[in-house]
Amino acid sequence: MPPAIRFTREAVLDAAWSLVRREGPAAFNARAVARELGASTQPIFRLFSNMDELRAEVIRKTDRVLCQAMTERAASSRNPYVSVCMSYLLFARDEPELFKLLFMRDRLSEGDAVREYRHDWGFPIIEASIGVDRQTAIRLYERSFFYTHGLAVCIATKYMPCMDEALMESLVTQNLHAAATQLGIHLDEC
Image (cartoon, rainbow, N blue to C red):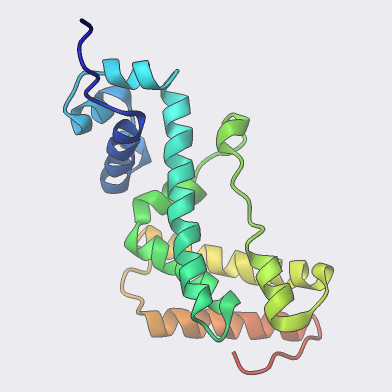
C-alpha cells in the first residue's frame, strides 16, 4: 500500500506564501519552503513542476489578497478610486514583502506566467465613479497611479516609515485633484 500523501498543493503554496510574506522574495527557494512546510523538498516537486510554477502561484495568491482588499474597501467608500489607492498604500505598509513581490521585481526577465499582473483595476473605477470616457479615465489613472506607486514604494522600503492613514489619504486625494485639474476635469468632493 502506498504511503498516504501528507501535503497538498495548497499546503505547499501556503508555506511558500508565508515564507515570502515574512522573509521576502529573496528567501524563496526549495529548501526554505520545505523547512517552512516541515518536510523535505520532495512534496514541492511532486506537486509543482518546478520552483517557477510555485513562485507564479505565490504571486497569483498575493494578487488575489490585494484585489480582495481593494474590492472590499472600494465597496464601502464614497470615493472608490481613492479607496483603491489607499488599499494599495496600506498593502505596502502592512505587507511590505508581498508588495515587493508584486511590484518591485524585474518583469522582463521573468516568464509570461508571472508577468500577467495588470493595472486595469484603476481606470474602470475612475470611469464609473467620476463619469468620464475611457481615454480620459486612463490618462487620469496614469497621472495618479505613478504618484501612488512611488509613495507605496517609499512606504514598503521604510523610506517613509511613519506615515499615518490620514496623511496617505490626503496626499492621494490632493494628487488626484491635481491630475484632474491638469486634464481639465472638475472633481466633486473626494
